[in-house]
Amino acid sequence: MPWTYNSIRIYVNELNDTDIQEVAKLTPFGGGSIYHVFGYQDPATKISGIIVGLDDRDSLRACKEDGGIYELDTPWGVWCSGYLKQLTSKLQNSYCQTMRADLPDDSPVFVVELEIYNEE
Image (cartoon, rainbow, N blue to C red; front, side, top):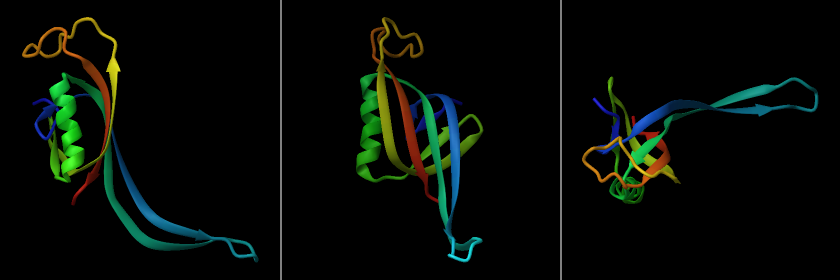
């Protein structure tokens, strides 16, 4: 099974999950530290990879704009479901793409980074 986000094919190079606990660190004049735990944030997932074609790039942009919750599907099943917080895409200078046989050889290739706020 390929990697997809909202059914958009992504050739993933790297995946990182971030878990954050909100902790305030207070340092009184007398020295030492005092910690106060306020709770935690839901996990966030960052993906670096490659997509092919303007349609896939524009579809990912639309996920960021519509406020929907989408699934990140992996070879191991659904990794997470969440909001696309940020999308960064960089056009690769290539003459011929060979990853997607269903698209023309001269389709643009993008290196992308997605940040997904997991909805639990």
